[in-house]
Length: 188
Image (cartoon, rainbow, N blue to C red; front, side, top):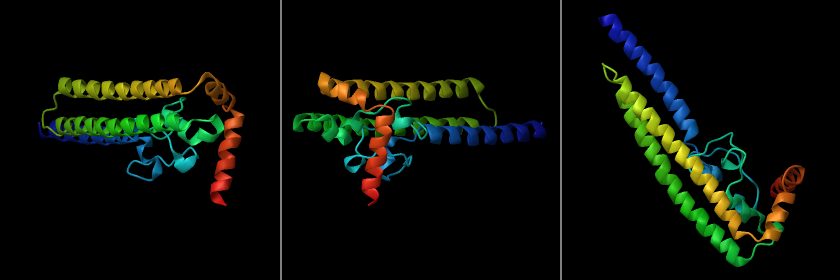
């Protein structure tokens, strides 16, 4: 009996470490892109590195949203896109709201992961409760990804059709050159 308890605890510790590692990486956000907590160290160069934060998105995800740009990156391209003051103001407001939401979303995931940690530390692990908590965490992460995409789509609606065409033209190699140019200018 003692051996089973020891094995269960060892298994629990391994799972906790695994979940914490995955959970930590997945709850990173571009929120920290300016050097705050959770900084992914990936920054789109622009005016002050401005970008819309996609809550809960982690490192390794281009522009915080997988293959998608985050809405706030448009702020850093205001000159290239020819954004009006009203558009910049609207995008900054959207960025602020999304950052606030990011804080709440990350906190919610951290609370659920803490709860999962508690479940895994029990002598008798309730696998159904563990599975349920894992499902809740996954659902929250899916909600976060959907919110990021919605934010990007909403921000694109702020742009005129001409600005959206310019944005499309900036993709790929042109965007890479633009970023390299900004990095060189910032370093000088």
